[in-house]
Length: 225
Ligand SMILES: Nc1ncnc2c1ncn2[C@@H]1O[C@H](COP(=O)(O)OP(=O)(O)OP(=O)(O)O)[C@@H](O)[C@H]1O
Image (cartoon, rainbow, N blue to C red; front, side, top):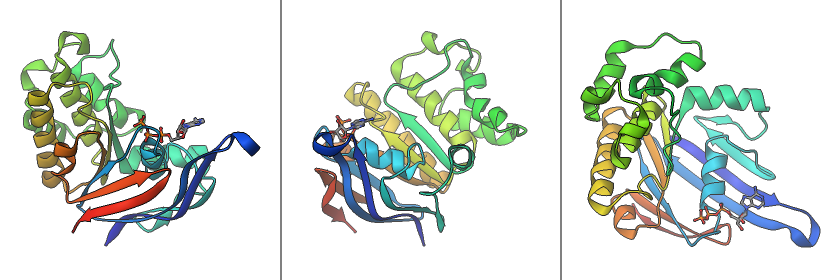
């Protein structure tokens, strides 16, 4: 079953002669449990696509259908709730809260949604990501790879069906990138998630089930099964 779908998706920025066609008619279908890599040159529209899929922004026209539900017409409040319940985000810059320790960062989205923390599940994630010893540390006492693992744990903690990652290894050396990638693949399988990841790295892209190449806001090629 397709968990993510776009239909004639367009996102234009600016007006008249200054219009930037960041996405210009994207039709895409991603199956449940799939790991999809999105590649393309700088400015081709990758981040815009990820933002649309995750309900971080609304399209100019076209549809974004998540789990059978069209999110393109949702209000900001509806989108906020949709994101918290369905999507985990992992960004290049980790975006951890510096004054909260590792554990507090991980459970923050659960608490923001007014839910009780499933301690067993969160402990399982912390252990899976090798963070048990670091639970009480502040983010700036951790290495880049460890901080990214905290960001992944935070993204997984709300049990999202979809994980969206924008250059998650962009700030990491190649060994740490491999480790983080391995963890992302392992956790997405373990927690039955669909993963869409932007990467500039062809080696990383080849780990995906499918590679989608974006050029000038359009899908130029799809590789893989
Ligand atoms: N908020 C915005 N306002 C105006 N133009 C924007 C905005 N966001 C993105 N753009 C433009 O839309 C196009 C696509 O940007 P996008 O960030 O999606 O590209 P990208 O492929 O992710 O690039 P990179 O690899 O450099 O991150 C670019 O020309 C960019 O300048």
